[in-house]
Length: 98
Image 1 (cartoon, rainbow, N blue to C red):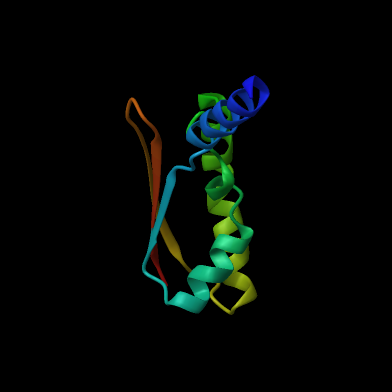
Image 2: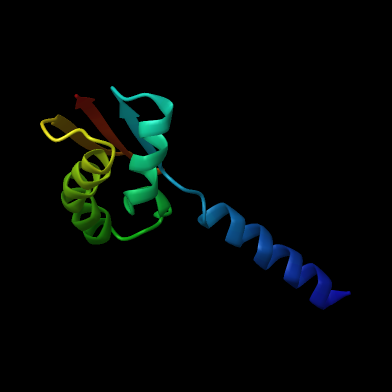
């Protein structure tokens, strides 16, 4: 019984700490958005990822987004990006102009 409770607690705490942050992408249709998200590594990071890792992935996100857009024929795009963090998690926003 003790081990069942311990396992439940560990799984429950693991689920809480593994929550993912929000990546918001605007300016593209759903099919293009799906392609961008397939290329973007940042959206897989949990809220408790180290700040240095989030910043590094955020810097590389523009290149990943450009590559995803070029695959579907968009070569001259403007990407405005913002990274915000509060005490609970972080939010990355990308506004794409095709």
